[in-house]
Image (cartoon, rainbow, N blue to C red):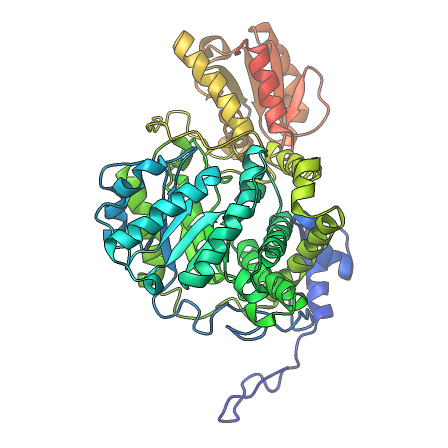
Length: 601
């Protein structure tokens, strides 16, 4: 409909409103020009994108795409934020993660933009006995501390509380989280832990430290095992419910128990899905609180971490861009605290530059982009509201399936959750292998001549439970083979690009082929003859018209010159061609087989 301005003058008043059907007919025309015949809703479906969890993103959303009322910030169902003011006062909490004692790193973070600390202690982190040293010089009444100590949580919590007492910090001034997460630890290691010590810590916090939480519901183990957004949400919901049961059985009320929980989620470079995930998480937890008879306790506290799965080891500088988008999504999605992993996180211990860039990412978004000034800026978007509702429904169904199978502890121990996550990752791995989900700097636009970024090794994290996957792992294995060949022979494996015709005819496919083979560490050669290239295989690059005229003859000439295998960039059937490479082919399979034939082990 046309909305008149205050003065009553509307320049569009004489024009009728466009309809959805008219737009669909225009889409039909565009698709017809590309050789595709669709009509009506099918034309719109042709432009839709399939996501995980059975979700689909359509090309156009309108007021017809209704979604449940998101409410107002600070009120159930808390979709638009857990607090009435959101993060508009001072931005989100910039939480810096530390896994090792690096001279001055903790204070450097706090003095230059960081507002809280996340300390990984014990197995895979800083020794608990070194906690005092880690906090040396830190004003604990100003900087909240969050612990992540696994099976050493009780010992670490005692050390931290003792430190508060020694510094004379009043109990009501203590802020942070003791980080108890027995199910998260079991997911990481496969080792179950008794809940009694965590219940005791929760009761102690509830009775004496009003600003201190005892438990973290960490969804990162499920995200890092390859889980989808709905699986991450469903598993976190089931974990939160399991903790509520344990805490209420230990004598806490539902409101007291819920107040002891902080939820940790991953933010990816898929900004809209991340925004919807955080909004959906708050709706889901509000529903749990409502069912438990405490609707006022449903305001979920969220700590969001930029995804370790998306971080690459090759061309790690691109990780800065990924982390920026993920941080933006976390802020827009309403995260209370955000941890930006340094761009070199996948390589080892971050250096001072990487830590600085990580904390400055949040600082720029808060202080220069003013991202936190508006509460839930994505709210009201037909797309975001619909995606939030659909994701919440998918996550709720996954949560219910976990509950039907006995709850989170049961599905962890039966292997059912591992199987679900592995199935999802297997499907995603196919998209990665076919480059339907591109990885810039790795599967797309790799730089073979890049100088490796080296870092000191980070402590080994706990293992033995769910796997930790990375998007780049298949390509990393291929590049490692190429690196070993370079070290042993002084040269990378090579492939000759045989270009036919003018640059206008071959450039597109030559660029495609060069990108494809470099993703596997194979150096493309375009200059000179095949005999001078040092290659044992070749790929023809040109237009379909020239292929019809010259492909067979050129392939024969390449074989005569010593080529053992001849590719063609494109599709078709041509005599003398061994295999074809094209958009959507299994790049990992092609590259692995090529390295095998070249003797690159």
